Image 1 (cartoon, helix red, strand yellow):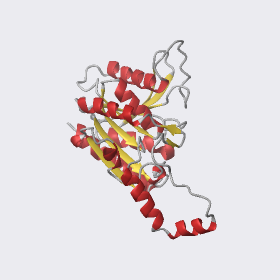
Image 2 (cartoon, one colour):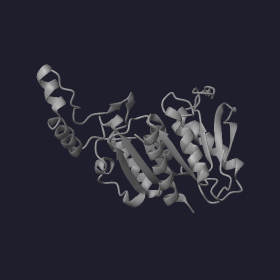
Image 3 (cartoon, helix red, strand yellow):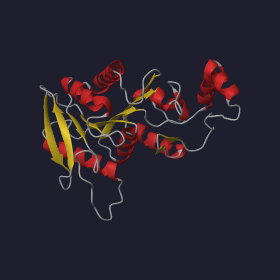
Image 4 (cartoon, one colour):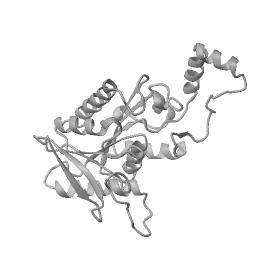
Length: 275
């Protein structure tokens, strides 16, 4: 595997690290790894580095880069630009790789990956650009269902901590309210009706999706099949895989947790795109 720095974008303002496999395999999509929140392209506890290198070792070309205004990338300055900046940045990253590797058959196919806000930006980019054929979403979108509340209350009622807190502070109740917009870690999700239409569009394009959740987002996701249950009208079929790591933290600070999710992503990529 070889890693090189790359400068690209309309004004050369975006900076990334390209991980290139020793034996690139023609036909495979390129992979983009987007920032998580305000963290730069290394990712939390070097998660993006681990992902990029493992994927490159499996034959994928990977670009992890900083969105404009983050890390090493300069702020995008474009008067009158309506498209949101993360989507514009991701599309310029795709343009860069498509042009650079235009001789490869998979040069216009991309899988986007991100944690938290990186997942949100990956989803919006996939909706906006048909070159996206897959997405890996770590603690991505989630919407509460009746089963979510059943799990939530059952866990509280079976927990001794719940009774200690209840009787020591009888006026407090931190149970999430049913319905309404979810603001998770300063992320405001779009209305479920909008996301339904977006998932329907992605499924018509046969976009493949992997969603992995941790205990860090149990305010809005607490069981494995919840995303599927949230969209009963969407025919996901075998295009959506879900996983829940109830003991893992949101940013995967432990080596074992990072190794587990990285292996999960690589295995999924090889099954879906390992031509």
